[in-house]
Length: 133
Image 1 (cartoon, rainbow, N blue to C red):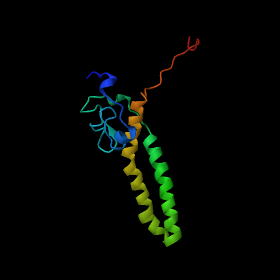
Image 2 (tube, rainbow, N blue to C red; image 1 turned 60 degrees about the horizontal axis):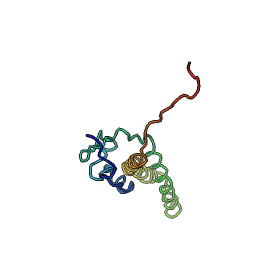
Image 3 (spheres, rainbow, N blue to C red; image 1 turned 135 degrees about the vertical axis):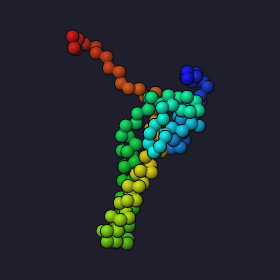
Image 4 (cartoon, rainbow, N blue to C red; image 1 turned 180 degrees about the vertical axis):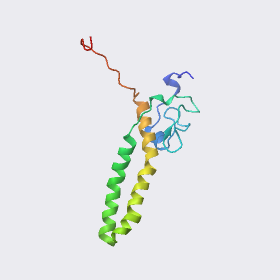
């Protein structure tokens, strides 16, 4: 499909489309298939998702956000209830890991939406000297 002119597609909120894992151009089509796999293109508007490469960004943001919140909850639980260590291994740590996995999709959708809005592209290098001659 050919890309329509920018006037046909209003700029959508990256938070709204990203957190719902929707197409950053039309806001209707799904962005992901499965848990974390980015589709090839939007089935609604035909936007090619070839530009999208969030790499490890979603994992970094998920672990950072859940790590801070999880440690606050872990310390509050530890200081108020004072459970044995096996309770943390059986309950607290799996909850923190599950929370990290659950927020990966919204973070990935948000980063892809940001890449679309800011027209992210692979870097192109050009030699301005006589390097390699």
